[in-house]
Image (cartoon, rainbow, N blue to C red; front, side, top):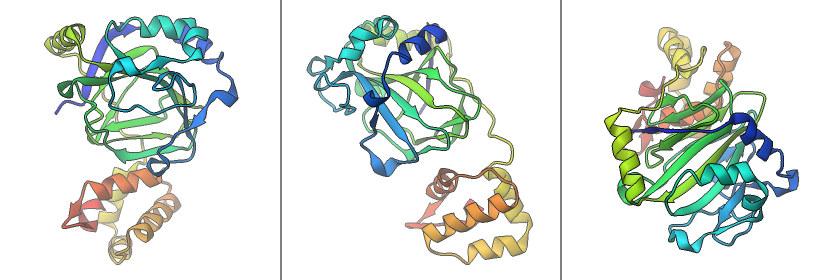
Length: 267
């Protein structure tokens, strides 16, 4: 299954940021899915099920049940950006991930083109220190560009930078225009660019563990998941590796054997 497509739309990053500045601090709401992130993940809605800014829900109901919020009226360039997609609009939100925060690996069911709905990302503010992985591949998402991301696949995000990572996220219903957009993008092989993992990342730490018997044995001896994650983070950081909790969690999740983590596959 493909991780997504780079779409042919480009938007002015400075005008996007100018509209972002029109949103007050008290108009951002903590994300409702408290189990899926660490740190600070919050959002504000331009279109929601109730027409309220604080409603970040994106239910599987028809586009006709969603209403514009006051932000859609206030923010003219966001409104212009959204109008570039002539298809039924569902939830339209700005989601912000604070520095040092992360979104754990998860999937969003029935949000793929083949199911009749798509999630479009437009980065408003990002940096090279933001890591967005889909199905284990790190994607390179640039400010002002637009992407269809297949969030039915396992995906996670870590912000190792010093500024908030903010995306304009548009959920749409698939119509004839969307069918033609996807057909054309696939014909052009418009893949999303990939980025290399950062230096001193989890893969580098895993290689070190394999090469150091004492370190390897100390981790293999731990059977409890949370204790293993804490130990791996501590030992990795002591050796200069830039590790965060979702790095270890994602590796464990990818190497489950009969309901228990296969430590030897992880490190």
